[in-house]
Amino acid sequence: MEISNRIQGLTGGGSDGWDVFYKARRMIGAGVSVTELTQGEHDIRTDQSILDAMYRSASGGNTGYATVPGTNSMRDAVAARLTARTGVHTTRDNVLVTPGGQSALFASHHAVCDEGDVALYCDPYYATYPGTLRGVGAIPRAVPCLPENAFQPTFSDIAAKSAGAKSLLVNTPNNPTGVVYSRETVEGIARACREYDMWCISDEVYDTQVWDGTHISPRTLDGMAERTLVVGSMSKSHAMTGSRIGWIVGPEDVVENLFNLATHTTYGVPGYIQDAAVFALGEGLALEEKVAEPFRRRRAIGQNILAEQNVVGLVPSEGAMYMMLDVRSTGLSGEDFADKLLDAHHIAVMPGESFGASAAGHVRVAMTVEDSAFEASLKTLVGFAKEIQP
Image (cartoon, rainbow, N blue to C red; front, side):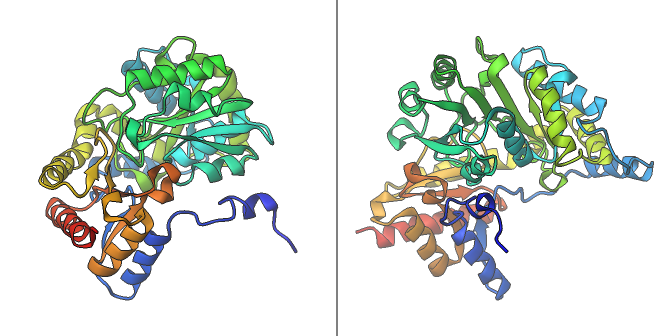
């Protein structure tokens, strides 16, 4: 018996980009001590106060089916958050609660793309993006975002790929680059979506991790609220990665149809998880800043280390929990550099090539180990780059 072409083709017939990560995990399984700077996973766990709220809800009996679009309290909390942060009036009717941001990305593209539609995404990209688009039957088309433009997509970059496209997926603050899109960039995104009649799917899961600049949602610009679906999540903002809770915010008619999709796929998110998320959102900026602070601190550590040498370049580190490093001076690809670093020093980083052709010759470093280990690892990485530089 054969399985479907669609599921066999999710990775486009090649690697899923996580080979170095898998190799590091095999080494760990064999008893080797490896410093992992690969996944966007907090080194702190979900705050105890959130877990207490989750326990109160579950032990109080909220363990049955929850309403499929999300509880009213959760949808109201997300709507209030978006209204306060963006100034765009948002109600619960604009919100669908999803099992994490990844589910929201998948559902959003199902909402706007038919089989065979072209769906754009920016390169460099989060590793699941092309597979997500293939999974809904769309044809993924990359928009190259060049290192010389700090990996920010220009209007011209997007326009060159927009003929016949149905949607554009953007992500700011950006994974993997750590770049926060400027107002000029976001205005260019909005202009391209309007002129080429595209939906904008805006992945904003890192919106609480902004170190320089200002996060601007495309949904806030003229003519964009009616053509933008915003993907959000509690994973990065509140260290709730394992709780699997996120959302889609968009026009009411789209969200109403997404309810039907959720009924036939996820059938909602557990009520006690939603109650914990409502509690967490109610804690406001104080809790979000507590979760973000280690990455802000490590970013400063990394900047100081990299400022003292000229072999490894740093892409503007403006947001998210990553640093994107330029290792092209070593003469190695990002893949070879990451592989050799892992073999030589048992430090695992992600090759830029895992995130697209535009990031070739770079590596992504997740700032997700405690400060002293992060500092030591980054110094070792720089020393290794100096050693192998031609």
